[in-house]
Amino acid sequence: MAILDMAIVTVAIPSIGPDLHASFGGVEPVLSAYTIVYACLLVTGGRLGDLYGRTRLSAIEIAGFVATSALCGAAPSSGNADS
Image (cartoon, rainbow, N blue to C red):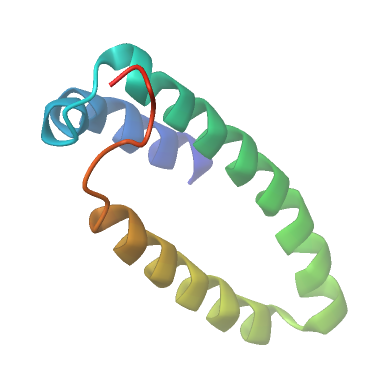
């Protein structure tokens, strides 16, 4: 699933950049940050699922994903100085 997710983001970069009025150099740090955060939360989420229950944590993770996706979708620009 992680490989599929990164492939989707990588394929979407050419259309994300112009929509946000950002160059590839402006979108690249966003992709790098996304990859690092994704990897850290993947390991942490697995451990928290063991501690607090996978069902409960899954519901929290889905709600967090939906909220952050909505915020990203509402972004007017990439927020980088390079854009």
